[in-house]
Figure 1: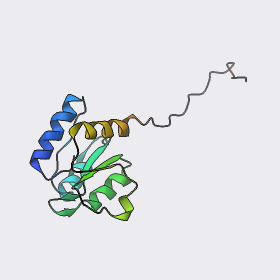
Figure 2 (figure 1 turned 120 degrees about the horizontal axis):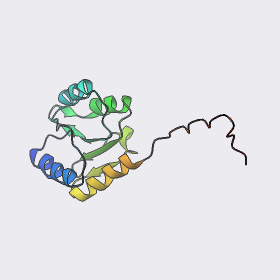
Figure 3 (figure 1 turned 180 degrees about the vertical axis):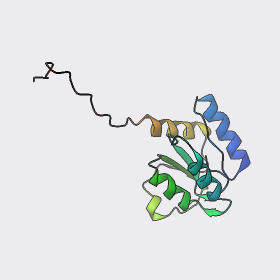
Figure 4 (figure 1 turned 120 degrees about the vertical axis):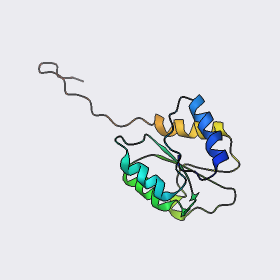
Length: 128
């Protein structure tokens, strides 16, 4: 999670933990987020990123997560005007409740990845 507001971090951390979702971070800045992403052995399943972090716009972190194909939930403050590049993204603007964040993250991570079917053993060709 990339979020600069300590109260929101704790509020969401508690709700995500109760929902069985493991949280990495939080990070408060783009620089911290990029460092965390660069040091992970395994890619995150999804990310929650506030549009504005301590060091300004989160766009560089969002781009890094996009390059790593990490599904994103963007959050922000009421009245924020997100970049036109982000308008088609999963996004919640305050006020929002923790259950809405949990539901949005579950939706992001529930999207099944396309997995190729293993080949059938010789002699078991599929007919139909």
